[in-house]
Amino acid sequence: MMQREISLSEHPFRGTKCQVCTGCGRCAGMYSVVSDQRLWQEKQPIPHTGQERLVTADLGTTTIAMQLYNWDGGVETDFACVNPQIRFGADVLSRIRAAQDPSAAEQMCREVREKLESGLRAFRMHLAPEETMRMVLAGNTTMIYLLLGYDPAELGRAPFAAGHLETEETQIGGVPCLIFPGLSAFVGGDIAAGMYACGMAEKSELTLLIDLGTNGEMVLGNRDRRIACSTAAGPAFEGGVNRGVWGSDMIHLLARLRQEQILDETGLLSDEYFENGILIESVRVTQESIRAIQLAKGAIGAGIRILMRAYGLGENWQAVDRVILAGGFGYYLRPEDAAVTGLLPPALVSKTAAGGNTALAGALRLGRRLWAQDAFGNAQDYRKELPDILGISGTEILNLAKHPDFQELYIENMNLQ
Image (cartoon, rainbow, N blue to C red; front, top):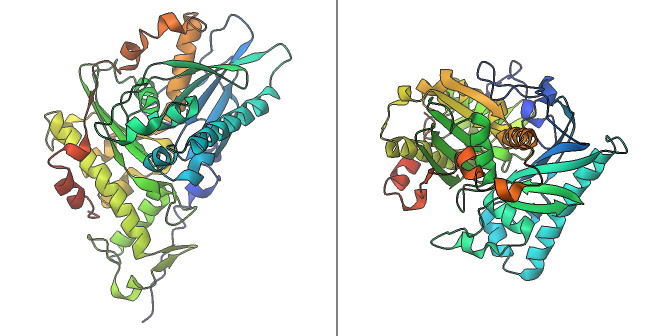
């Protein structure tokens, strides 16, 4: 049987341009975009009283991203790499288990610090002789535990309590570093930074923030009420099955296959492609890769719907004013593709914007604020205010694993429709 040829020339694979995609937008010639819904203004001057330059860092499960800023607020240069801890496991639970070996825990701490120090060494080449640096870092709770040498065992067992969620200060390569506080064992400082970047605790608009990475974290709310949850998406959105083909591209491929009626709503390829998959340009889409995306989107879709129910909105998607897709995955995801494959309800397409790396954006915003209020160096006094400023105070945390509707919604949302 002759197989059809599918061309994607109108949508080149943008997510594969860099070895590590942080949503920085460099390959599109931009610093960061949110079309009509800009999360922060570019090149706002950074208040300063000395010669300290601001550095932001996003310590993720899969990647580490850092940026050095000019005094005018623009990015001087950046640094990105794979988190070396990935050899201990692709997800946080694997690393929590690995860290029960003290030598492995020490190694994970040392290796990630060495990578951060590598970024700072690269940044020093851009400094004037009299200039120094100060860093604001955001990361998920497990990554912060491992960075600071805390035992993460409590994060991996019921009741999944986290004893170290407060604002932290440390030194990395001789550079003072302020670490974002977290919300819970699985909703960390990177999400707190994203909430701050979105102004979620300041605005009346109801915002749905979705960070799709190895961990899928979501927050729904505004200045009056916020609810957050986390679910394990696995590495599917970051090229875990089709290595090097990132989630936004896979979602686009699946959307095209659905439109061409080669892929049905249950995730099955038509008979001629079932066994060997289908080659689309340079990418072979197989049943295995489709199923990996379905498992990930099932968890995300269930989480979104449970948040809506917990907020008292049911399926009233019109009540949501804006959706921010965070991270490299969200930066390149076309909302129309997300709707075709069932990742997002169609009613949210026109309200959806790419937020880029909201962890870095939130760290930049906090760095500006600390400088403006001369609070750097006085973070001990400032840290009591941060939970209120960031929107952490009062944010409710949902445990999806214990929610009675999760399993049913998870299976329902695996469908590609």
